[in-house]
Length: 479
Ligand code: GUN
Ligand code: FE
Image (cartoon, rainbow, N blue to C red; front, side, top):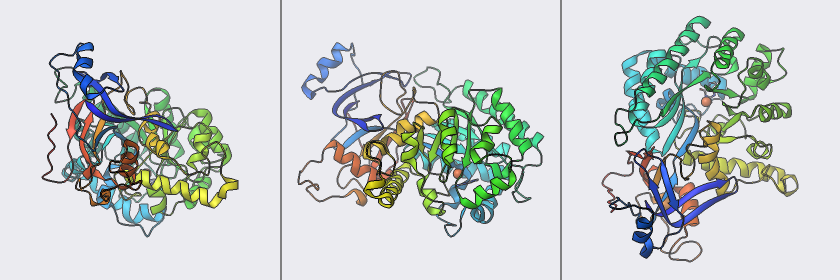
């Protein structure tokens, strides 16, 4: 690829390289990149790199490469509910909206049909790595894993464990069944990965893109016996990712205190069952006590920030800046359908607004002079959370999240041209600074705040071109 490339570097910086030359090998891994190559020196640089007769995709003006988005928390069976039920807070929303819909996935045909369009929709949003919750159903969740596997998306997939405080039509019958089916899903996904991708990358064996994740739904819906068994399973399998919800809503927190009165706090419940570790993803973390933040930092546990959902279900505003100051890993989560958009772009926009609310409430005196707490998140930080931060949260920071030699090419080609088909990204002939040609930084900011999937021309995972959303009729020919 030759052209503009944007890649996050740290929580406060990213590289914007207008003339980058980036080489992807046959296995979908980035071989090398040269940050600044003038157009006239392109052939010479390729020759120096020993590249003869290679296919170079030259990005036309207004386009740039960006690492794929990482959604660290979403519910695949809730996409059918998107945009409904916003009148409820969490516990009523679960009873009235979510559980009835999830229960329908006992019908395997319905599950297959729904999941096919769900995965396509999420890929079209530019999500190249996704942490999925399924339902409690084994067969439907296997189908989700199969569909994701065939799509070529990188993902973690879990079957919900939930054996109490759920309606009788949607609850696991026993700890034994919950454990047996969880183990079966894990082996299904692992054997599926070792069989390789149906469409191999240039003949070489595809790496394991789809992985299982242990998914106790949340403390409210799990008996101590279930959490204890899941903790044992986790300790026998240290590399297994774990995902759950924490401290999202005040009524939920009060309920957890009632159910686990001996625990010092919500995080202490997961801790006591061995479920709080470096590869656990905690979604929401809106109302954590100081001691919980300390414990989470000590355990090196990651947090999935889900601001769209936190606004939509009136849960609150998570103090993400505080977590970042404490060195906690943070990624973004759409949390569909608590969140009403499957796009990480929408999550980025709401993460920005969430941080501005905290900054406004704290005022200049209450904002951290040096760190992130109570300050608005910058474009660099938002980009980081959506990519490399998410990769850290799911243990993939050496594999994806930015462009570097040895990393997988999980990438998006962004089309941020004027009149690119998204009227939201339209701008007058001159940009706000009066320049006729927006800078690469300007294009990035505009895309993050006004873009949508119409601006995502191509989606690559492990070098494989697996999606080309955008409005119908638009065909880009790269030469
Ligand atoms: N807590 C337990 N289950 C859920 C869920 O499905 N969505 C959200 N947002 N919170 C939860
Ligand atoms: Fe959730």
